[in-house]
Image (cartoon, rainbow, N blue to C red; front, side, top):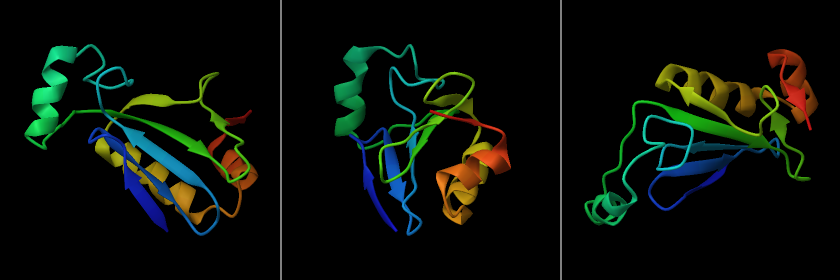
Length: 108
């Protein structure tokens, strides 16, 4: 597994199966911070804390093929337990096709 932070407002995890999940909760993402005040972003990043009650996710494979969630490449407004469930599903899948079959989501 490898992972990295995305400007202090989320992270990506890439698993040995070649699937990556992105979890984001910053301004502009589909989460409780979506309509945050952009002028507060710099101050929040200086303080190294940035939280949200919900987050958005995206999932893709190593070839760049993305999951579609109800006609969008991201699924937003997820609670922590839902995000954890998706992380587990992505980690345990052997391919994006298998993940699609197990979740009923659409492949792009």
